[in-house]
Structures are given as C-alpha cells and as structure tokens.
Length: 409
Image (cartoon, rainbow, N blue to C red):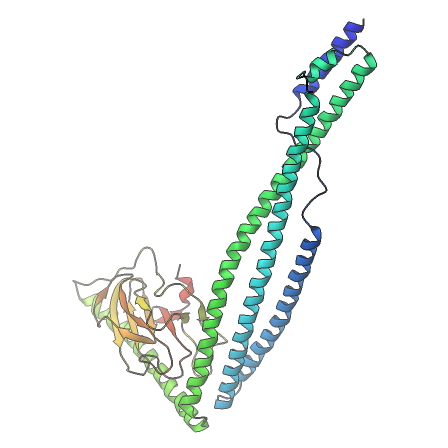
C-alpha cells in the first residue's frame, strides 16, 4: 500500500516537474539603484521645466510687444523697438534651448540609472535560481526525484512534494517578473535612444538660435548705421525698399506671362516639370519668416510672398526644378534675384542673391548651381533693410504666390 501511495505521488510530481519553465528567475531583490538619486534628479527636471515656463511667458510678452509695434505707424523708433524685442526674444530662445539641453541630460541620467537597476535585478534573479538549483541537486549529485523516492516516511515524502510545489510556484512568479523586467528594460532603452536623438536636435537648435541672435544684432546695427538715427533717412529707406519690392513683383508678374508665351512659340523649347517635385534650393534649414508671416518685420511695407530659409552668406543655390531662366537680375547693392519658369504653371524666385551663375533664357536642370545666397546687410544683392543672411524663396502658380512649403519635400 505504501508503495502504491508513493507511486501516485511520483506521478503527481512528474506533472509538476514537466510544467516547470526552462528559463527561471527568482524573487525581486530589494537592493535596487539608489532611489534617492533618482528622486533628486526628478526634482532637478521639474526645476528646469518651471524655468522653461517662466521663459515662455517672457517670450510671449516679447511677441505681443513686437505685434503691437508692427500695428503702429512705421517709424524708426518703432522699428528699433521691434528689433530690440526680437534681439531680446532671441536671447531668451538661447537660454530656453540651453535649459532644455540640461533637462534632457538629466532625463538621460535618470533613464541610465533605471536601466542599471533593471540589469541588477536580472542578475540577482539569476543568482537566486542558481541557489534553487543547488538545493534541488545536493552535493552527492542525487536528483530531487531520487531523494524523494528514498524517503521512508510518508510525511517526509509529502513535505518534499510540497516543497517542490512551492518552488514551482516561485519559479512561475519569477518568470512573470522576468517578462516585466524585460519589457521595462526594452521600453527604457527605447526612451534613452529617443532622448539622445532629442539631445542632438536640441544642440543643433541651440546653434541655430545663436546664429539667429547674431543676425538680429547685425540687422539692428545695420538699420542704425544706414539711418544714423534719423527718422527722415529711415522713411526715405522705407520708400526705396517698398519701391524696390514693388518693382521686383511687377517684373515677375510681367515676365511670367511673357516668357511662357515666348516658349510656347518656339518648337525647340518645351516646359516639363520634374515628376519628383521641387527640391530645397539650399540645404533644408530653419525658416526665419513664413509665407504671409504675421511676424515679418517689414510687413507694414509689403506682404511676405515667400519663405525665408536661413543660409550662410554665399551658400550655393540650386534650381528647385528644371526650367528656363526668365530673370537673372544683378542689382549691385540692391535687391538681386533669379526667376525660373517651370512646367505645370509653376515658377520659382530666389531673392537676395550675392552671385549669379546663369543667364536669361538659359535652360537649367533640377539641382544645378544657379548662384549664391546673400542677405547680409550692406552686401551685394541684399537690398535695403534686409533681415540678415538667408534665401528669399518664392513659388508662384500661374503668376500668383503660393506657400512654398506645400511644394517642398
């Protein structure tokens, strides 16, 4: 009878052993990464966020001040107030970017600590399982099954079975924890990778903001130098700038129609449009002024029919699409520009050019170098009251300015 009972328990035991998972980890260890350090980092992160909110409030105040001055009558005092506010806002942008970088570095440090903590827990689980295995395989090399079969007492045998059942439950719990640790570790590693990418973008953003500040300061100095703090001279420059832009706009509209009619009569010339669409005429960069931008500093003179793309003085200009050069105007220190006629009713205009490599009626292919960018105050092609080095880029559909960003990749 005793042998029969032993056999029954043996069958039950085999069922338990078969269901034991192969990869097992033990209980959670309490020796995790220093939670105090993580808490301190969280406090620092919150402080940075509070600083960001304060800066955002100040930035908004400068935006409103600029908007208010832009709505008032154009005057040298108003323009200087606008430029001073833009400089102050650019300085805040730099401060904001630096704080954002600091905050991101703290977040990276925090995630690294959490990853270290998970790694330690996984190691501890392995050590715990090794201890369990040593208990199940005693020094004499006998297996747990052999030990149970050698028990003479039914009570001892039942206790052994109960012991293995408890171990099986602990192993099951360990597997659940392992899955949890693995998922958390993978999630934290993904967060870390994202934070590192964010950090690189923030560093580039900081460099861009520093360049923007330099441009704003140069613009302010240029206006003061040109006007010599004279309201009369400033008004004269405004009038000339307005005339310059109106003349360019009129030329563009007239040439759009004339050149297309001319090409249509010439059998050896035809207009096609690149199937891939437009490409960026300068390396993709920060947009300093958008199409019909309400914050455009000279909006009271004319509506901004383009996007201004930040580009270092003398950056190579590429044809955004293949087509015929309708205008290649070198205005000396005035506003110089290139206009290209494309198929599908499209045309592109490249303003504030410091050098021109193409001639009118010349056919250019997409990506071909057509000149160099400008915009630095007082340099060739920049024109009057420019806002610093950039490319003024227009896209026109059937002669009407449209938003270039809707055509650029």
